[in-house]
Image (cartoon, rainbow, N blue to C red; front, side, top):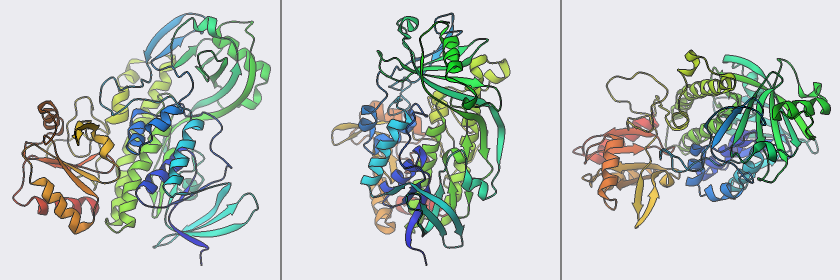
Length: 530
């Protein structure tokens, strides 16, 4: 007999685990989350919330909270490439922008360290009912046909208790103890190198020389790495992340040697430097062979590890959690079959593989790209928003399919499996971005001549209990928005597109069928019980 029961046990309380708890709690599921550390991260680690992450958090009403905690004096815009900060500038390329210049996303980047973002996720998850326990570790777990029995240990007093859950989500990071215990391997390039992080204090103002940049890539005979400011524009607190020889560790570097690395990166041999701390980690590129083992589902770094270049890692994990949350919630409520969970790996594994490769390309970019690698580089907007899902939770259309994991979201196709293109809808006289309306349920977007879809959706909602809303684009929107919708979604004036809770299109039709309620009910049954 278990000491307690819960529907979902989440193991790991970093960005991804906390996001999983938040998204599940928003769906009305009260998970238990355990984290062996006693508090959220004390180190910045992930440095930015991507526009897609911000879009998801914005729909939960968290955009302002996150913006208020952004890194002081955050510098949006260019990334520099230099020999040294004081020396020759080799080039510039686009860095994060606070507003999406392509107008693909609802919002833009927020430069916020993991240490500043995690408390926001934690507070909101608890507000919505998630049970988050720090200083608690998973000792063991055993699954059967009906659920998972886990043994937890309180690290403060050593006491143990058993928890019975219907599902377990492993978000235990790159060490991936749960994944390895399940015998799930990985594939990919493997270890690319070691990276050290040196937090230091120095007056670099004269060498910044009025330039504004997010990060500065340094490449010379002595050091290859990244410089970034940790405080406001007048702060002397910086971080240098130099690459290390294979197998090396920060423990092999004295404070004096760290000072010499900083001086080599800045290009000033006698620079006054005070080292605050240093750490190191492995730079690798791997994707798990499986994202699921029965009732154990895996998310975040335990199933995909990528170089930090691009800022894709933690953000990809948050999107894993968002994709999984609505599916788990519907299965737990009995509104979907357990086979819906198969679509999680079907959708997220190809995206993980693509995103890892893009992180590697950007990592190699520090030293210059050869033509073959450069040809595989995709724009940031495509990496963040261009995902194409193929699974049982998408009703694919007949016709050619090149099988690519992404498409260009600047020119959206509207086909099932792609993210619903951004639209400025009008709700009660107020302009609201489409993705702000995706707070946990399905949204049926109908063309201006599709008035029959709204009563059809109401009938299906009443019959199934599903959270389903229909909106006729053109009821309040101006003609230019209607034209934009019809073009981006590829539906006729009487057609419709069904947007899933995660913002991806599950199905579309160009016309209004004779019995729209029956058609919509059949579509949802096929999506939820593939």
